[in-house]
Length: 573
Image (cartoon, rainbow, N blue to C red; front, side):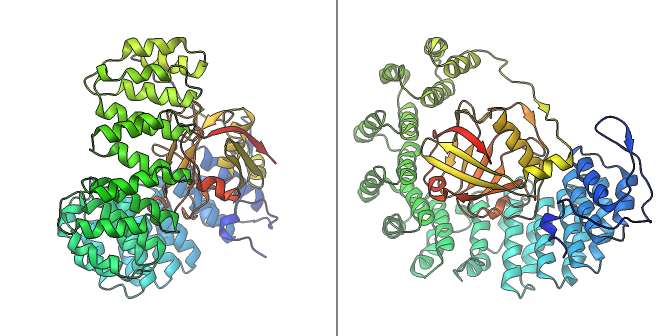
């Protein structure tokens, strides 16, 4: 029985092919070795891909191979290498009779970042019958982000009779608006009433129309409280309701007579049994602090037994423009919290509202037990506009916690950038073994067990290698946003990571569903040690980050994660 496409990289026994003659490739030792069987062909393709080596002779022969697994591995590899050359090699397969090969060709073209290749995807989209392939065509067009993408997709929407395919169309637009928002300039030409009509269906498919609107810059200029208020009266899925709350949070930025009605809905939903709905509704309240009811509810939520709810409510208050004696007292009280994230949010609220001469409370944090809290304090002081705290930062250069003193010294230097190098990868044989392993994050709030995946063998190997090197020991979850992600792998809590070695991406077909684990990056092939756990459906991230794991135990720990939680150790099974 054939392995599934997602497991094509596993070592398998296949008959040798007389049509693919020996081809010399550089081995780990620097010597050349022949491709003489299907198994080694797949191995060497993946090693070339990890090296970002578009060896034309190898790929040209592999793409013409009689074994479909080799062709599939080659197309997936072309997508990961990217560039015009990779797109050109994948293009002929967009018309192939095999839907899996068409899907992989669409994937490779989308990953190529070669915008002119988009012109070949549109004709295929018009005649494509397979929903699976249509999805990939849509997502690839979103990844390529043509300047006229919005207009062309809105014209196509009327011809898309399948609700599932329409959802993928909106996912395409969401990806485009997320990663190409500056290039897509014709938002004003969109008929948002049509988009709202799709969203109003209220199920998980139609929710993607709403997700697209949340990614549109200044969406509050195109939809109003009148547009959204009727939707609060409809029954919608929890996923759609959370997205509706996101949209309402944006539209309530403008003063409106319906804001009071929307406030009542937000208060009700902020006590929902669905955490995503609860968190997004809590964020609405930050725009409505002029109403006493909003403040009362935020006061209640910031002492919630759920740490994510409490952190979110306090952050909403800290980010708001409210500046009263009562809110300052609330922040001062939270400076004594035993939860690092609550202390950090309180510091943020105080630093935002007070002048330098009013901030005598900082002295009380000199001896704070959490290095994470002190590092985040230093970061906020350094970045406070129109203020210079260098003398105070110098005090922390003698902090007993080495990570704090090092960070303080770094802030006082102009050239604090560290050099990065490309991490050395193992052979494919060693990498694929890592993809069968499980790892356990031993955190200060509980254990999280992750199954590593064969869809990203090199990423899995590098994750395990970082664990063995101790790069995760006493590291932090430094970026945690409720109903989005929990990002870890940061040694000092400043979001710079725990390693200076970058690894190659292994983008795959896996979706950013809750409890999937991905690599955090700042662009192609820039990942180091930082990873994230999806705590919500983040479909706008699909095809842009490497999914390499899945939380299989400790999901409750992941869902109550707040920033400042420490990873004590990562154990490899």
